[in-house]
Each structure stands twice: as C-alpha cells, then as structure tokens.
Image 1 (tube, one colour):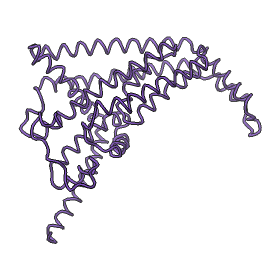
Image 2: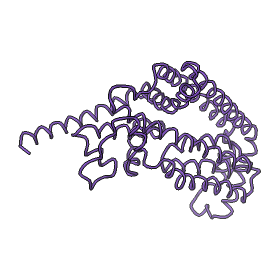
Image 3: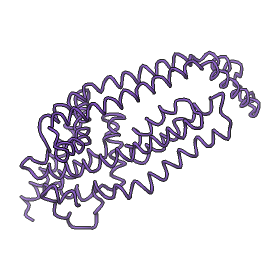
Length: 353
C-alpha cells in the first residue's frame, strides 16, 4: 500500500468520524420529528406482512387491506387503552388503603431496625409518607399514558403514507434495501409475536394473583421486551412497589407475583427467543449493549426500543462499502475473519440467510 493510498484512507476515515458525529447531533436536535418518523418506518415493516398477505393471498385491494389492518389495530388500541385507564382509575380510588399500607410498612421497618441510632426522625418520615398525594400521582400517571397514546397519531399518519406509497421497499433498484427490508421485517414480526406472548402471560399471571394494574404491567412487559437484556429485568421489577404496597396481597402472593413473571421472562428470553430469532440481525451482544447506550442517550426510551433494528440497518449499510466493511465485521463479532460473507443480492437470499 502506497503512502498516498494510506493518506487517502486516513482522510476518508476522519471524514467518516466527523460525519457520524454531525449525524448524531442532527438526530438529537431533530428528535421531535425523527422519532415519530423512524417509529413509523419500523411500524410499517411490522405491518407490511399482514397487508401483503391480504393483498396477495386473499386478493383484497391494497387500500382495503391497509384499512382492514388499521381497523383491527385501532380496535386493539381502544380496548387496551380503555382497560389501562380503568385499571389506573380503580387504583386511585383505593389510594387511602395504599397510604395505610405504606405507613404500616414503615412502622414495621422502624421496629426491626434501630434507625434512632443514626439520628433519623421517624415521626417526620411517617408524616411525610402519610401525606403523599397517591391519588394525584395516579391521576398524573393516567394523564401521562393518555399523552403518550395521543402522540401516536403523528406516527400513524406517517405509517398511512408509507403504506399507501407502494409495496415493498425492496422493489427499489438497490438490493441493499431488499436485504434491509427482509431482515428487519423478519425480526420485527418475530419480536412483536414474542413480546405479545410475554406481555399476555405477565398480565394474566398478575391479574390472577390479584395485583392492581396487572394489565398496565402486561402492556409494559410487551414494550420493554423490545429492549434486549435489561428490558425483561425492568419489566419484572416494575410491579414490585405496587405489590409491596397493596393492602390485600399476602407475602406468599407477593413472592409469586415476582417469581412467576420473572420465570416467564427467563424462559422466553433465554430459550424461546434465541431459537425463534436465530441470528437474523447478525449483531454481537456487546454491540447490541453499546447500541442501547448510544441510542438511549440520543432518543431516550424510544431509542432503546429501536436500538437493535437501527443498528442492524447500519451494519448492512457498512457491509456494502469497502471502507466501512471492517466496522460491519466487528459489529457481527467476526474479529478473526478477513471479511464478511458476500451480501445477498435478492430478497429471497436475505430471507433465507
């Protein structure tokens, strides 16, 4: 390799680093617009198989297929939203019982541990906890959930235009987009199915055990399952405050309410998910963890939810260019190989890989 070639590669690498930094800043400052759009793109990937099935197999016009899928989605959305709002409203009516349970737990803690040795004002803590506005906090939680749900309107508008705009992205001339669509579509369909089963089982277990907000925690388990590794841990621990403060739950039921959903997360996350997902995105676990941190800093919880598919898209793009191909090799965990295998040129090859 000549000195001139080395200088050119160094210059190109520096430009790539600067471009990456500039793009990251742009994504951060334009997050209010980019987050709904990117969500819509991946939601389109998830919906497109259902629309394609109705169009190609059932011979239903594409416009009617899109309308049918949206009607089903709107029905599920309405039912889930109503159940969640009703659960939070019912819990707010029992705010007094929760305050009494909190006071009793604090009294038991003071009886077990000698906090007075450390100069802790027990009476002051009791007064502050007994005056907690539990009811208004729950109402605020309900309003926050409704606000999040209302923000999905913009996402759905993007989805409608993306679906109406045509069929498969892979029909474009560049085969890169064929591979991106094939891999991301397969990943999202499998992930949505696994997450739905997880959320349904978690919500059902908590409901049978009599835990308040069981449906809310089931819905959160569905969403958090999109975050690799840490999402299942968060989903398992989220019901803990409600379980401990619930006035009608015994310690045996409380242990079951933590152990059973945790077991579901463990089995699905470590046994079922690897078998179903396989190596569909071809990303090393360390890269996924770093992607969670990077996208979480940029876009918060939404960035963490989308970190895996967005990083997979970047890996596919890096794989297609000679300069960035070593980066794609690192992202795939092939540090010892000299190169990545040839990229598939068709949608069928990408789906089979």
